[in-house]
Image (cartoon, rainbow, N blue to C red; front, side, top):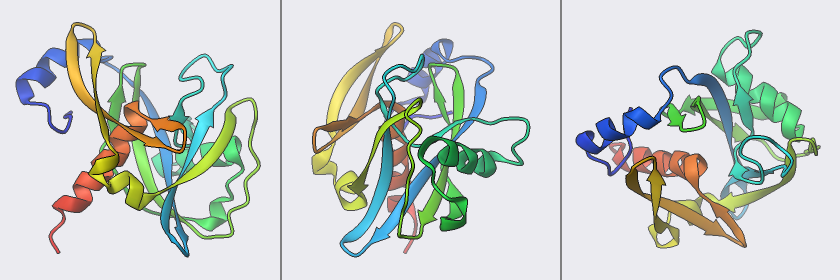
Length: 187
């Protein structure tokens, strides 16, 4: 695995803090084509959850044995959490897996959602949803660096503030991975 901007020796030292057998999970990265530009839909997790409570995230969760693949898991979770109709979603790609300290190997599933977007939140899992312009996410002037401690190691990571919300951690990492991969694509 890799972390953008982190050298291989530092990554080797970080490996001891990562679970050896992470649980497969998938998140849907829902992009919506609005007249004012492309947006990404994010959720704020419910505060009563045992893991990642109150955090900004993509809809998603564990890959269940009944799921045909990670895309099916991400679509199922998005339907359960925010009522997103899978018929309005077109999966078009995947980002590299993100391994998170909490024990998951998360596959981000890129998707385009056709408006109108009608949602019905599951309050047991989601406190709210909001959209952020992709242009805001991809503008490096909107990225705030922060040192985070992982065990006995420090990492320079980035947060993306948006209208009182703070996108950080794995969610920010996935968005920045998406941005960097698009920048690396030949024209």
